[in-house]
Amino acid sequence: MRMIAAAVLGGVLLAACAVEDMPEPDEGRALFVENCAMCHGASGRGDGEIAAGLRPRPADLTTIAARNGGAFPRAQVLSKIDGYARSDPQQDMPEFGLLLRGDTVPVDVGDGQFTPVPRPLAALMTYLESIQR
Image (tube, rainbow, N blue to C red; front, side, top):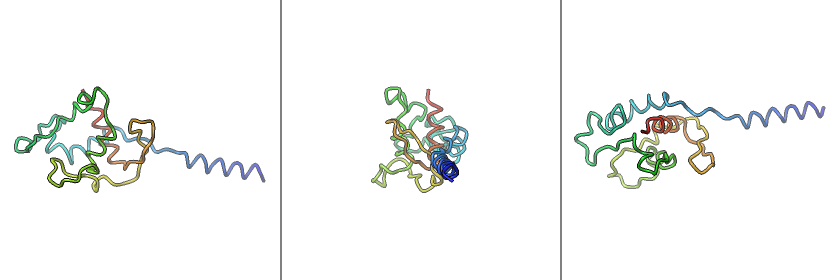
């Protein structure tokens, strides 16, 4: 009986520790094309079809790491996309938080601590991280 209980407990613990995989950049690229390319351009360089009429101009998303000492600031990027850090409705970028809900995946935001992040938001961050130059 103890062996059965130990096996059941072990299975429960293993299931609790199961971690969903981080999304691949391709998953985020689809979201980028749908939600971001209009302003930031297909290449992410701030040259989207409506970019010329925007002030300030959309950021070059391929240089995020370069602008941050060579490190990709995951927490900052997640916050910017989500809109969580913005309180001014006149900000230059729309909030996408409500569009990016869903199941969560654990994301290391740079401090070794994993934070549950909605999968679409994590996918977009992964894509942006993959296009850094």
